[in-house]
Length: 490
Image 1 (cartoon, rainbow, N blue to C red):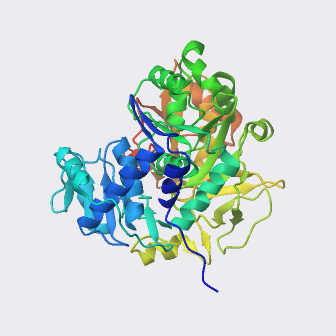
Image 2: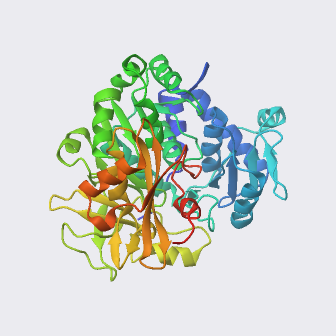
Image 3: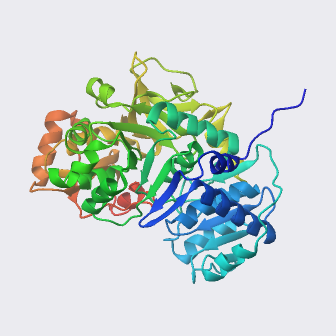
């Protein structure tokens, strides 16, 4: 019996081009593309990549702005059988070189004038478009479940790591989007995050695979501009990071009105507090869903609105087709209510890091992926995050989870955001330092007093430092090591 054919994800665009040719595929400002044009443009780019010598399995970097061209190239590389290497066009040149030296792409598509020293680059300007016009349209492309995309899971800090997903694994992530998150062929997905960012990129590819519409609204923008664009484009679903949601909560009801009509508002990236979730449901969108996910494994769990009312501090139950464990240091599952290391497995989880067997052995073991997060399951299967294992503070031999202190601080009306880190100490090994962004008037003594009334004495911060902003990765996550570096040892 012949083995079933493994389809290239770009095959679906060809099907859409025949069956729903005039269906709106992409909107960016005043420019639009239907599915007939989308399939045609993707195939032209795949043909040009072949002419440039890109063969199946070759790594192709994409360092473009958040544009229709960016989406076309994602599917163009997929069509030709290449492996997508996302690069942030906002990085400095030395950051791009560091990543390209590690992954050795066959070529990188860049914005005009943004070539990377020592790397074969193709600029996406007028010459590129003219070359596309001369590319043959009818080509043969190989099938097979080959590598498709890798996302940098450590950005430009530490050694670059690229978890690799195949065509089939990415499609299994799409299944999760359709089952748990509300994506469908009728969805109008509003993308307000950089396409370099794994969440927004994957949601865009997923929407086009399903035959829906992608609306691009690239940052930066004011919250009022975002809300107005949601209204103009009749978007039905969007994904926003916590930092942006906190900015939206500062807006008035009139500004936020267009967001209330969304069928689904998804948040991922870092955990929100129960109070923030309540405010988001009440002021921004009642159909708010929190999604715990990772670059390497995709979705882990989802917490819809009804479950937020019952378990406001949880990140939800495991997502479709995902199995989640909390284990001890010997990889043995622990009972409900006990904190341990999170591990999970499923058909959408990557198999390892590209060209990095040592890092793969550390995070991928016996079919499980270990994201480095600490958590706890309750007896109903809801998962509660306790922070990153590397961020855990050990004070006088006692394990302290920063997230618990951060949630306490952010419960104060004048605190916009908080980050808690270990402060090197000769006496206790580590003390606790908190960095806080204020939204109103509050003094350090008031926040310390709040912690004293809400937490055990050993969890109370030694100091609270007020800052205007927190150091972040390009994906918006707080760089806690940079905060610790500001502290002189006690």
